Length: 612
Image 1: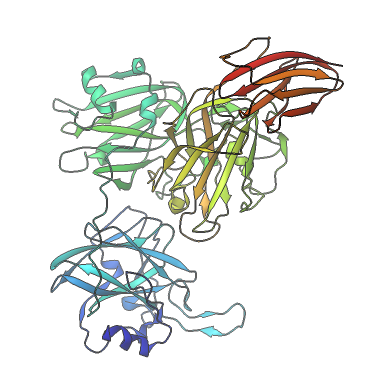
Image 2: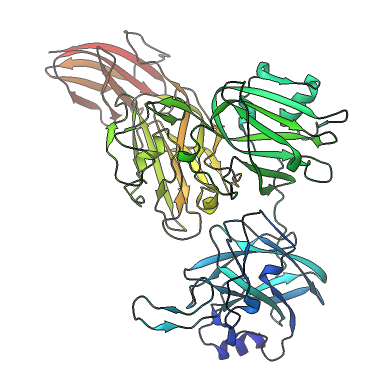
């Protein structure tokens, strides 16, 4: 530990945090190898040998050489992006990695060594501006010095050549000038290898292409191999270019596709032609941009703008299509093709997601794309359910309203405030028992990938929120880099007729406060039929007696079995509901005819009563 304490004496702000030995920021002059340490290598950030996508780790040439090493640095360290570097270590073991950067905000970087799990390191705000130049302090008016600061981290290298990926972690990272690696007598354990992700996602819109609406100039079995979600099957265009056309049942805005091939190379996607059509007559070519790697697959962004950046929903109108076509060049082998995006339908002059259990969309009096305050034209259908959220708060109420989560509209943002280590709950309470068999989550633009949900639970309650059962749990989910896309998830622990309330519990993404983005969620399944006649269902014992008194209905339990009730008027509208917690429960009602449904673990009963 001698080197660490030497460094600590040189800059008393340095701290050692956790297993990776994370030091706080110091000026560049206070960095460098301490006594007994050796500089192994210095690498300019712009000298990467590869990067995760074309629009990240951009080399900037506007640096002033008196503040910026060589006058060059890199920016655009988007979430989960990286530049690839090779460094040679004289022996296996622990080394210090010193990263020199400019940062006008507290941010984080992600460092991956070889096949190890990515380490996330804090890079505090420093005095220089984003270009490394001096800047004026907004509060004091003082001129703050330019040049980089450094943060020092412990990493574990193998003897010989190592590959380092340095970039954004869960969110945007700092602008990086260069990094250095030093020997050290400190020791950390070699991190575990990163788990190998699957090559395919558990769901994509490829599943929703009707099998009778796929046409191709190749063998039908070969087409099946491309869309069957089986990595072992494949197709190779050996005799010429292959053309495949398909039609969705509804218009789609396709924003990404995953291509998996078990052969060397990237399936030659740069030479593919991808087209869309609204009428199967006039066809428009879609741009195809490399986005990110998933397992051994490559995800490509579709229909990005001319600079390869996200195209917001208001700039995608007119891109929605039912018909799509790909032309695969001769000699290409492909095992699987998965499609991502979001479905749309015309509604009140704007495009919305199709129907789901949460009912009609909210409608706006103005432009729903605007960032100015909007008035709601209509509210959610009261006889369906009620949306609520936990009190951690929401983002900007002008255009980040929590109601956007069920407006069936591809919002640019819906920001929900949640501490990095905390959670936020989004609850939907149906008025009647509802079977949710699957759900979908819609994300925002890919530049905010680190703010998309990563870990969550989906829960159901049969007793109006008193207790909750976990129906699905997802941990560390990695989203395809495809703008504003939906991903569907099945509910594995679905039980017919059991639940009436549902909620999501989303964990903080780990990047700080106010960092959670979600565009939309949709619930799919069946609303259970509202009783319209006097009929007892699954009755094995009469647990609740139902009768009327003046201006009320009395619910009398015959045993200690928990029970709940729903009361409908003669039109079928739910007017009261609750949990029967005492021997006798009296529910005040106006005069009229009512249908009372009582449910307990052993029986479900429907009774017609007249209240005078």
